[in-house]
Length: 310
Image (tube, rainbow, N blue to C red; front, top):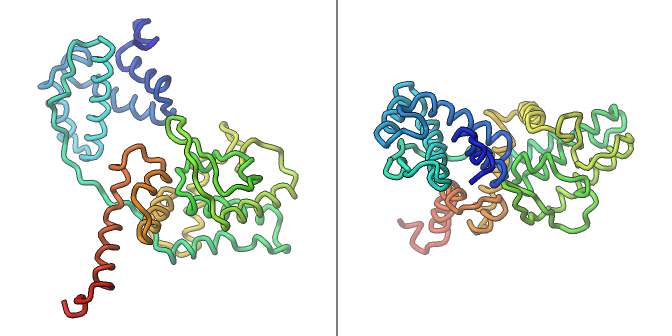
């Protein structure tokens, strides 16, 4: 049993402490669970420790009556399932009332992505002015930083939280592999191509030339974490995408999807892409099967001897 549970903490708080202490969940993840479970605790008949399956079904129906999206309702039910599994395992409840529950049906949307030409245009716009000595040094450094971020993201498919927290030693590595610490503190090796390595090196040269303060991070910033925040990078990327004439919401996650989609389109194995993305379960990576389907159709169309006559 968790320390909080032993001290008599509420069931939700005990579960949240377990997520943080045992699973290494990030602060944002814990807070998302807290919001979802607060709604459940306040609205389910019988409360967390007394609710039965019928009470939970009624709560689910209430979510629909509040016009909550199916995806949001499914996420909340997932949190509730995990809570009750924890409570049963800790002996705080004699049963798990969620075992027989069916969740709201939801369709899994295809990930938004960019074409290869779009990525090329984005990278070209980001790199404008890096080597223009007539430009202010600060502008050149910002362009070099954005180029290093984008080249690295597109070359590796890192999560944005992993990207902005890369260590400063990344700029000094001679190997083509970097160690990335992902969700739950799990480490994985990710290859870094020549373009990304060159972009990081150029950024490091300009940063050192301006004698910026030493930092343990590759992309330091005046923030609570000490490195560039996800929000700041997303904002700068959005501006860069607009300057490149790209429509829609171009986010770091979209570039992560582009990395995976382009690899699969060019013949990469789904299991390899799973490892590179840091997905614990292959089912998460299977959102990209539409790319494989299109590739198979192309192979049949281009290579089958009767394709022209079909």
